[in-house]
Length: 154
Length: 196
Image (tube, rainbow over the protein chains, first blue to last red):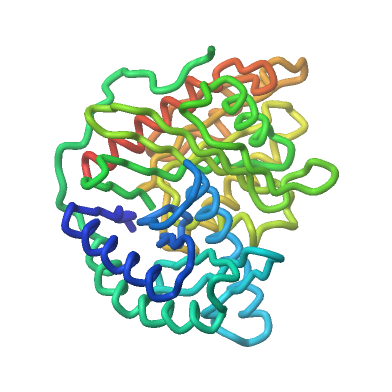
């Protein structure tokens, strides 16, 4: 089986931004990241330092995958929500269909109930976009590296 | 799973370093992390035991600006090599775009290399993937050690599929060949995307 890439065009990015912004406003969370199950960032909104989103995505997708295996061991197919509670900040992780996850970071300006409620609604509106950006095979204009060395010793 | 974001002009790919226990997968990432300039990398995340053995994976995000008008991001992962951690090894392979199989060149590790390679095939097949569709390179590591098997022997045991793949003789602790190997797999992965 060939692995089909995720392909995001301007229109998809605009739609994702609009829905994630609406979710942030309604839930009063500080950060939301839409993550491919392999650990890559599809889209992010809210505040994060450069590259934090990438690490959050990689670690959260792995944590979710590990938890999924735990679920199977006790006879569940999967857990649909993961929640990590901190002293000041919390992480809510929920599924968007079978192929994506939504990570929400929030603090005491909102509540778990509110985040949970709006995350469920957001997943519904995000799902059609997630489905259309996956498995696309038609695209063009990718760079040809030739013999170019991308990385080298100092 | 690779993503191509035309809105932000970004390509992101996932590359996994696979191989038997103590073959040098983490050392590859540590060397790369030490050498690549700060603007091109994120932090090296290691989920390891107190004894510094990989428990889940290592993760190193790399980034190259302006590759034909795109920013190319490569997310490097390692798997835990110890046999007991097969469930976590399999999880790391989800959505992999390119593989580096890191073999330990020492004679004493010949059997473990072959077992690990077979384990990689088995775990890939769980997702419906195969080496026919995923680009990969072979790295014969620890060439700086005395009791290493000659390259033809390693080729005979590991590079014997219908399609021969690029091989790199490396010493990850010294850094020899590490970037040649990384550049090769990055080129293969981007080439595969262009052809998709």
